[in-house]
Amino acid sequence: MATSTTRVVRGSGVLVAIMAMAMAVATATMMTNDDTAAAWSLAVDFHALSCPDLHGMVHSAVAAARGQDVQVTAGLLRIFFHDCFPQGCDASILLDGWNSEKKMIQNEGLQQRALDLIESIRDTVHKRCGATVSCADILALATGYAVTLAGGPWISMPLGRRDSLEPAPFWAVNNSLPRPDADVNTLIDRFRSKGLGDHADLVALSGAHTVGKARCKNFRDRISRPNDDFTWRLAGFCGNDGNRQQNLDVITPDTFDNRYFVDLRNRQGVLTTDQGIANDGRTSWLIKGFADNQAWFFGQFAQSMVKLSQMRGAGGGEIRGNCFRRNAGGINLHQTQTDAAAAGDDEATTLAASA
Image 1 (cartoon, rainbow, N blue to C red):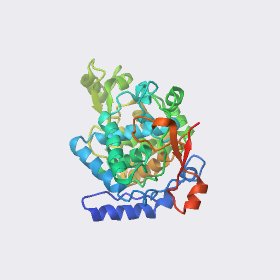
Image 2: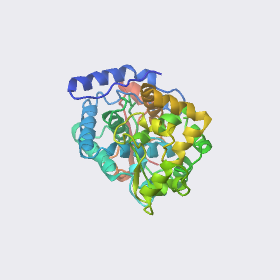
Image 3: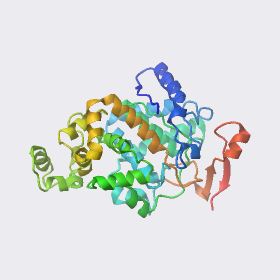
Image 4: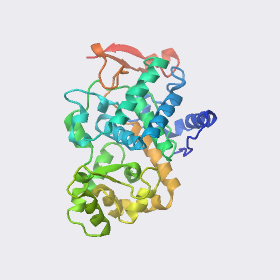
């Protein structure tokens, strides 16, 4: 599967070149099973006609946000992953309300700056282009740019998603998102159930921890019985403060690179899940390979992120006028292949009242 690891740098000419390259590899990155972009009719250039400045607006907003707080990259990555796993990449995690996913224990500590950034970008995009781009697409695109701006690979994100009408139910969140102390068998099972059965997907996506942090209470099992210099240092750092945050990459915590895998190879994984995949024979060879070859990691990460981004939502949906709440009146937008064909482009939509 072809991917590009070209990075976004200063200058509009380079950004245009990157976009051209992204469109060129779009076909190669599209999946073919029922839960992927083919079923959604996703495409890298989905908004090329309705919102030609979309990429520029998202790139500028994410770059400005990183200028204020580099940790926004980690915040977006966590929100994106936690949105996609329970019921597909549909921005359900952004919804407020009594049954909001943000209130669930698995989503404790979602970064407010990153959440607000998505809504801020939506406001900018809708003022320029009208209500043509979903919050789900903005989240996917912003996450991709955040990775690139942190030093990571370019991710050719397919677009054309709709926003969910409801949050994911508790059981879906609980049964999808692995705990930070999960064993490797659980990780493999959870990823396989989401169409990410290749162990390379699990290991590469875990590499997002290269810019992440974790609260001490989420690796208490690692430090309750310290048995080497690293776990003793972690125990000393945390003390009795379960909310203190530890960098998951202890070498270059603000840069998206392969040093996280070097940490794991050196038995310096902070989370049980991280050190677990480093110790398990089914995945340890990938840890070593990514530690030795950053280009391999970057290529696999970009490919796995595209695969993750294609997890299908519940169907139907809408383009929210505010990412944090459902549109008034229950009106939803959904694309139909018949209407798209009749309109002659990828952006034909039809209005329908939700059931």
